[in-house]
Image 1 (cartoon, rainbow, N blue to C red):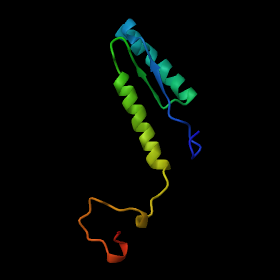
Image 2 (image 1 turned 135 degrees about the vertical axis):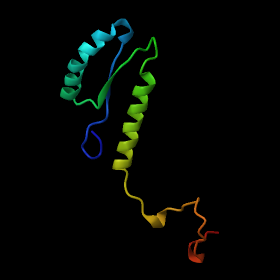
Image 3 (image 1 turned 120 degrees about the vertical axis):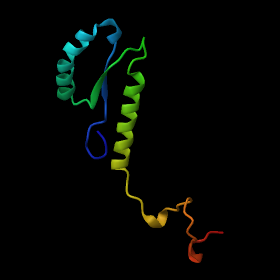
Length: 98
């Protein structure tokens, strides 16, 4: 569980699709959709490690989901604690450092 009580994002990888015909993969999509919903996965990808199919896509989606959760769960920042080094605004004398 994450800090807010939600589940840790997890994707199902349906590997070895290189061994199936496209029609077989299509026929299993509804079954996989139901399984993913029942087990509360974040989603699923048909993959082939042998042909490197959808491996990067699945990893990218997992990372995107993790980063979205990080933004959603991170504590708010207090402006007084943040210094924008890209800003061209001069700082006030009392906020200047050594």
